[in-house]
Length: 176
Ligand SMILES: CC(C)(COP(=O)(O)OP(=O)(O)OC[C@H]1O[C@@H](n2cnc3c(N)ncnc32)[C@H](O)[C@@H]1OP(=O)(O)O)[C@@H](O)C(=O)NCCC(=O)NCCS
Image (cartoon, rainbow, N blue to C red; front, side, top):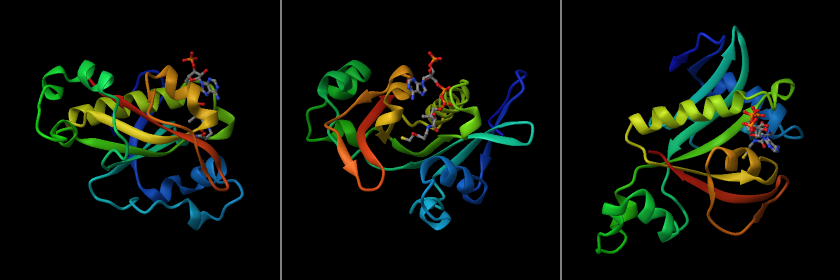
């Protein structure tokens, strides 16, 4: 358990098996259950979170350490880490940042738009920061751009297509 709120919800560590059905329903409604597994689901350095009200699983997200596959614009780096970005040697700046990737962010259909996803992601950010992770990144679906933007995530590059799913953009945020 990472958060037990008096407001009637809690956020727990969960196993991939606990969240596959919601992944399928929300993220791959036309896909098979097996297709909803991610290669790093069982990476022991990663973790999965579920937001529950009572016994009902409402919102899910998965996290694992993974290098950032794009160059972070210098303007963000120097604002977030003025000392690190003044280092001169090669790409050291980015190597010193522990980066995690978010995958499979989803709120089950009946509960979307009620603030649950934001609660889950904010709590995950706090937890990651406490683990010394300062950078969270992911490939965002077009439909979710406004959700992530509202939570302070920035775009890193141009849109690209993931076959069968559609337009995505890479997004990131420095956790502070
Ligand atoms: C994207 C998703 C995870 C957001 O979770 P959620 O629980 O519905 O989001 P919340 O209710 O916490 O929304 C937080 C804020 O983002 C806004 N928001 C969420 N989805 C939005 C959308 N599609 N368009 C515009 N704003 C949106 C909300 O209005 C809210 O703003 P507020 O704080 O001003 O009220 C969820 O809608 C979902 O599962 N979508 C389908 C799957 C998906 O696209 N996942 C992301 C893959 S990258």
